[in-house]
Amino acid sequence: MKRHKQAKNGVRFHLQTYGYRIMKGFCPLASGSKGNCIYLGTGNTKILIDAGISRRAIQRKLGEIDVDLEDIDAVLVTHEHGDHIQGLKLLAYKMGIPVLANAETAKGIVNCFHDCPKFKIFSTGETFEFGDLEIHPFSIQHDTLDPVAFTIRTGGLKMGFCADLGFATTLVSRQLQNCDYLYLEANHDPQMVQACPRPMMYKQRVLGRCGHLSNDACAALLQQVYHPGLKHVHLAHLSGECNTPELALQVTRQALHELGATTEVNVAPQECIANAIAF
Image (cartoon, rainbow, N blue to C red; front, top):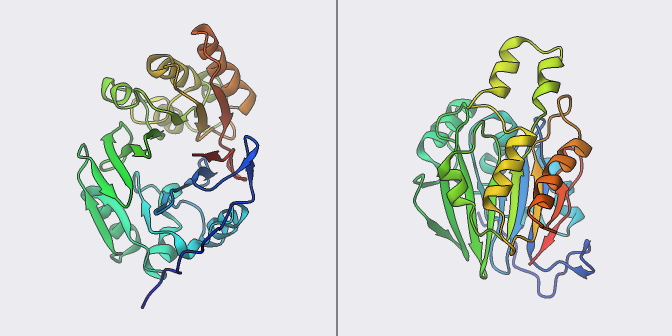
């Protein structure tokens, strides 16, 4: 059964970004512990990076940027935690959208749903092509089977999507060099984590090397990978109780200011779509 619609000539996104209409680009649809999902589209290829919110929410949010869910070519998965895959049950099993994942993450998805979607398996550390996207998955430190972040190249641009990691290794810093756009975790303020009423096990996980990146760690990583061609940074996966958008922005913008950078920084929110980026 053919799932995909024929491409419509002359379709334009209605969302205004930097004063002109989006023809292709990317847009974080949801970011945080309640679910994560990013749209990325070119003239030929449309994918989601993770599908951690419901199909209905994905469809509604895609509609805000005039993208049809049935035109999505694949879902690229970072790891098998529920806030990254809960929407796959309908997207992959009911709609037949292919899932791009490494072998260990694929096993985790099958164990979670007790069924096997249409996988396209990649190897961590090896670049592969999907449509007109050149995708490089690289290892990050998180408490899952084989978690990855991605750099994606298309049309001469390089984008880095890196969240859900407790520690930014030398590999992470090296892979995120020379990106035009970054989607980077700024999850928490450590003092707010220590002061929150959550159990000690939660605090140890979040603050550990396989947990989540703090505002300060995000800022330090930004200083390592900054270059004059860095156009925009989305701060991702902010904690709802151990961080605030204002604090995350203050810390990261100050780090960039120290370098004399004027790169725009925004927060990718949980409930609504973030600033869309046009290519």
